[in-house]
Each structure stands twice: as structure tokens, then as C-alpha cells.
Amino acid sequence: MTILFAPSEAKRPGGQNIPIQFCFDIDRKEILQKYNELVKSDEEEILTKLFGTKKRYEIDIFASPTMKAVQRYTGVAYQHLDYESLHPLEQEFVDKHTIIFSNLFGPVCAKDLIPFYKLKQGEKVGPIKPDEYYKRRIQNIEFDEEILDLRAGYYEKFYKPKFCVKMKFLKNGKIVSHWAKAYRGKVLRQIAKNSIDNFKMLKDFQFEGIEIVEIISKKSEEIWVMRIDEPCA
Image (cartoon, rainbow, N blue to C red; front, side, top):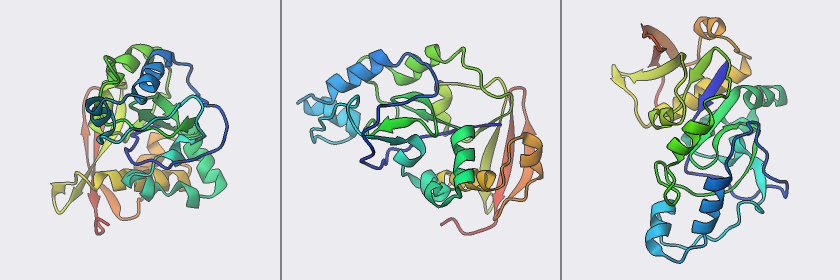
């Protein structure tokens, strides 16, 4: 089972002086070179669009320290995954089964080594739209037949599986929006801790604080409606 995951705008700086490493052989040269060119710009409009700030952010991503993608991102989902506290074998499970859809690097394995960067979700890199750029380049990548898609909807623009399982989270009968990120992280953590690697195991598993209450079947996906039975915190 492959688990698709979203990145986060919050990222951990630093890393080791090891070159960038990707598990997928995708042509990223054009978009990364354009990004490297833009980060050195003095134009406030360009800086604000890319980073959400007028502050100049000069860095060479090809020569920057790297760390695992799953450790680089520090947003809500990653806080609740809490990768660092997992047993090494559980970390290995995450490394092997999780693909993160970066808006700059495209699909990367959790264990891929990437540098620190800033790029607002949905923002173009010069004339390049990352979703269109990568959609053309990953059509021939073969993922597992069983895909659990825990991404935010925006990242379907990069890649839409022929079939997948998705999860929607309900609290007091209402769909959870912001806290859905937290529960995606919690779900991935529990999957890793219990080595759940197929749909049957996933369906039979009793998640802590989360219960499957409905499965909506469609041609290209199943939506599992998950009721949250604990405080959103």
C-alpha cells in the first residue's frame, strides 16, 4: 500500500551536507533552475508571491544542506505524525510507503533528501505551474495498486490515482477542515506503528479515537467517513 501525503509550508531549516536525493527519476531541472534564479531577485512582488514576505531569501538549493523530506516538513500533520518518536522500524515503514507531493520537487519519497525552501501552495515558479509541470512528468510512474490518499485536494492536480481510498473526518456530525491535517498525521502514525500495508488490514484496524462510520463507493475511489471520538487538539 502506498500512502500519498501533502507537504507543509512550515519547514525545519538545516540538515547535512549531502546532495539532494530522489527516489523517482523525474526531470526537475527546469523548475528548480527557475526557482533558484527567482530566489535571488530583489523585486518585492516576486518575493511576496513566492514566499509571502518581502524579505529577500537568497539561497542555492543545489548547494544547501539536506534532510529527509518527512523531517523537513513541520506542519500540523507532521507534528501529529511525530516521526522522530517512532521506532526505527516504524520510521522505515514511513520511509518505504509514503510519497509526499511537494509543490517544488513533485512527488518525493519520505526518505528523499531535500533542502530547505519556501514556496506558497499554488504559486507559480516564474511562468511554470508546478501542478502542470509534474503532471506531465509522472504519468508513467507506477505506484502500488492500493493507494491511500491522505493529501489535501489541491495535490490531486499533480496526480490522480486510477483508484484510491480517501478519508473524511467528522466531529459532531460536521466535516473537520483545519484539524483534518492533524488526523491525517495521526492516521499515518498508527498505520506505521502497526505495519498496515494493505486495504484489508486498514479496514479491520481499530484506530485510536477515530472510527469508520461509512464507506462511500465511487468508480475511482472509496471515501471512508471517519468519526472523531476525541477532542480536536
